[in-house]
Amino acid sequence: MNASASPADGPDPGPAGAGNGPAVSRREFDALFAAVRTWGRWTPADRGAWNRVTAQHVRRATGAVRSGQVVPLALPWNTVPGPDNPRPALHHMTDLGDVQSPEPATHKDFIAADYHGKAVTHLDALCHVSYRGQLYGGRPAREAVGATGARFAAVSALGPLVTRGVLLDLPAVLGIRWLEPGLAVHAADVIAAERALGVRIGEGDAVLLRSGQARRRADLGAWDPDTACAGFHVDAVPLLAERGIALLGGDGDSDVRPSPVDGVHSPVHALLLAAMGVPLLDNLGLEALAAATAQAGRHEFLLVVAPLDIPGGTGSPVNPVAVL
Image (tube, rainbow, N blue to C red; front, side, top):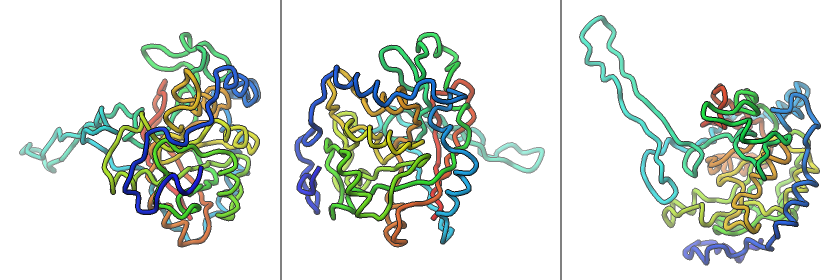
């Protein structure tokens, strides 16, 4: 990754896929999957790496709160179709208060979303992704997930997630407005960002990657992130595994696209969810947090994520909150 991949004024989207390499073969990817796999390490298994976050860790994480500033991290509920929102969320009124009696009148609405996309801020549970037919822990996906939902590693197994958050603000580090779609973030970039931002990723942390995607969308318009988006290259995953993270997220969905791995469209999803047991946060709104951390001069905070309690759910829409 380098600053020249995204000019400061950002007028040119550049070629899709530029900078997403190096290419990784399926054999190399399978070796990496085996190297970072944590199957059998924790009980209960369906909480995966979230078992790292104990009450003691949560108490330590509260030490990141100094000013008490609360920053919401969810995107607005998006009901407008677009290249990055082919299945818009739904919102309509079901009661306009026109019932005459008894008082009081009420106003009610309905919401729904096919949230595993690019427009709704959501949490991916461990059952969301399988690789070579297996969920995290080696459970056969066909046996564990059916028409009524997941019988293993559903979002209901996670509960509220509270830990220390670390923001890797790559555009701020590079002095640019955003990372161009298709630009990969490597392990060396993570280490350089830690040094520049004065923070170090530790065990049980939530790591949030800001690519500046929302800023680019505001300036240049929407595009299809399934075709091209900035995100982690798989060579960054061993570093995250070594540090023992418990949660990964970003203003994209953590994967660089096009994928550098032959035959695997979301390799970071496969490695984090199916191999490491690390839940993912997709489509975060990180612009306000970037401004707040820059003003505070520190890039750590208390992160609170409360998914809906959906038995069998593969994830949940969420509105995470950072407290500085």
